Image (spheres, rainbow, N blue to C red):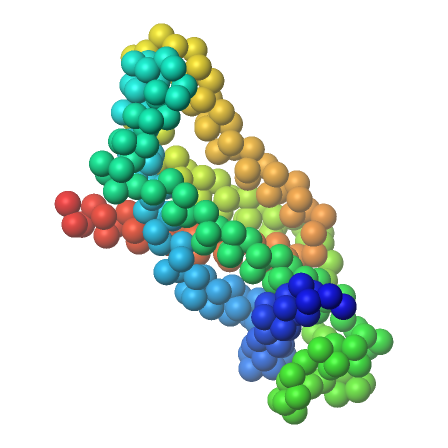
Length: 255
């Protein structure tokens, strides 16, 4: 085992795995409630990281009409890039500020995905292996003859949702999130209609298509995934929508 794998397990995978099992025991041996609890906790902990990136994204969207006008005025790509950066600087936007939080969140999601997969695949045969990965606290350990309860509402969290309800809910929440992320689309649309450059139309149409493509991809992928992972995706996306709503409300209230 190399140093990267050891660091990965020590700092991310094992803590998340143990935290999920701790929630499982705390919440009446209910894996669904444990998944919801850890999702909420992760969103709360990472909120200070995501907030600046959300605000920066909102500001960039508000500046989109001005950016489109710069494209028409400065045909040279280097000159346009320089003017765009000046516009960002004037409005206190650092385009790369949101990269690090997104990378950190992506890494956390990968580790959480691995923890979910291992737990959802656990059964009577694998409980001993699961115990080996848990911290040395009696509270966390499973009995040697125990089996993991993967039932939640109508779902078996270790299997795909046979009624497709959870994938549909995840797709719907993804569409709602996309709508909030495209909150300035009307401003962009006005610029597109007022300018003859077909490139503007292409960019606007691409943004509109992505608003529908992401939910479709979420639905298609979610149909085949274990419903426990889809439950995590649904709750996480829904919480992201609430974050956008809160930031928009605070922003409008401060005007």
